[in-house]
Image (cartoon, rainbow, N blue to C red; front, side, top):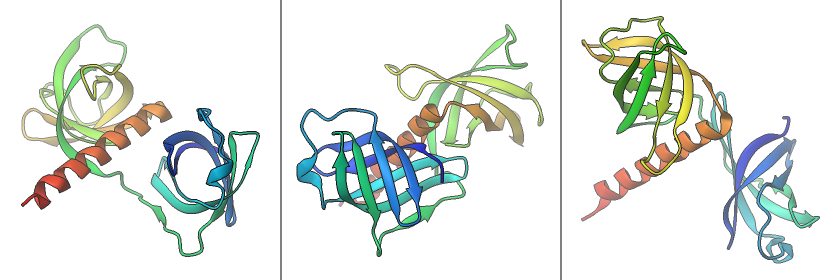
Length: 197
């Protein structure tokens, strides 16, 4: 596996962005954010590695075997660790502001809303004038205070008069990771609500 952007959950430091290289039972993670304190005391600790790929989320459990140059972690994949590759991105219902242009680069903008979203696509309202196969560009906001995510996609399904399923064809990897984190956080909050007495 070539080096890929991901996140490493380091005890006491939280989830840190990293470039991760997995090779047969071992991994290296170059942290993209330098911790404020040294990492020598985390050697031997268990960590979780999450990498967003075009096929879904790859999760690996590992142990920190060593630290080099204050930002490179040598990792051993845990023998009993979890190795999960989700081929389908998780999906949640949502109401997110979206501006849609079709054709891409066109001047006509449709103010719409994503009512369902995953790392690979969204169901968007108010698109009754568009048909299966149409190319679109989306400007999607996960939160009012966050910068928009720019996405190129194609309509792949119709639901009733106004709902269209859009498959994301081009989205920056870091933006796809933002969407995946948003979805996981929504799932976590929904689960808390269900389990609340």
